[in-house]
Image 1 (cartoon, rainbow, N blue to C red):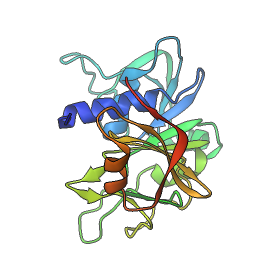
Image 2: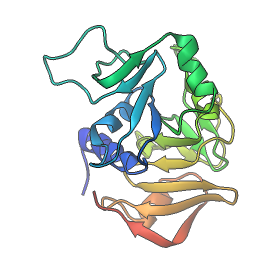
Image 3: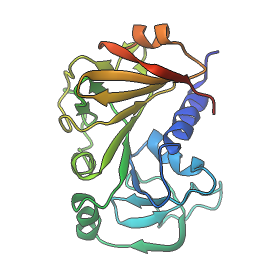
Length: 221
């Protein structure tokens, strides 16, 4: 079964949300990761932080109910939950650099078998800036990459990144519409396969050696 773009993004966001534990402080990167706030499992309380100065970010607002003054770091409209707080960048990055973020969820242009991440520029193209990613990937306790497995057929999970790195050796988990891959000292380990893919398909669309866990799961959300 082939998913359209919207369903791919929703599937990845739902799977990422399964990683959170009750009480986690989580930072969501721009783009696809922002969708994760909409799929936190029932009974799990997660505090979302946005590096532009909000803690207590809620799900996306309903169409027509956006507040132009409440946006995330990517300028996307968000809601805030009761008890949310607003603060300056110094405080925001103090939270990040101080090790108070349990997990950060980021998109990627490339990830490799060593957990290296490239997600901020393509040489020769306009660069919007690295943003808070360089701080988040070294400050958060867990780094989760949430992205489509390939880009127009080109592999994004590689033996070695060839784009400028955001950080080296910081990625813990890669979640795509095809499956879930753990970064280990021995390389990449496939631990889950989505119902929309197969082990053979994932290996064929991954540009690095991929070991398969003995207890690999077929995931259904």
